[in-house]
Length: 122
Image (cartoon, rainbow, N blue to C red; front, side, top):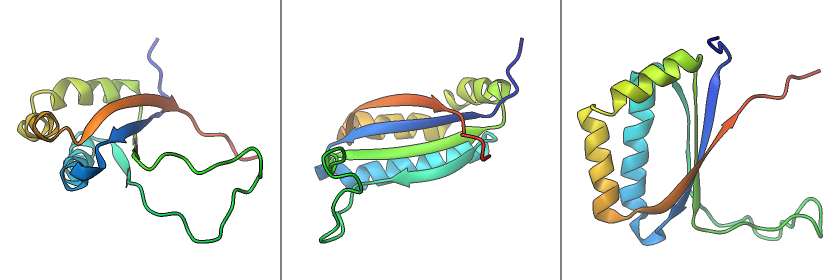
């Protein structure tokens, strides 16, 4: 049975921060690719300095995370459109170029995917 729920994916990258310009180039390419193949890209987010004198909301539970992490998030309307994107993007020249950029620059050293669904407002 086909799942008609939206497919939202978060990707968490571990960066080589000395290659941030290469990563940003990679990110711009993927934002375009996701949208070309029917998805909505919610953006890439790269590290920045913490605001001065602002602590964690829950002292003892929260802490500032690592400074070499970037996040991306995108959504496809359903599983069928996500699978179609995955099949078609693999041969897209821009995708191939972006993959070569990662291999040449090592702008990120690893990534993890997380599929999410929204919490419905009451």
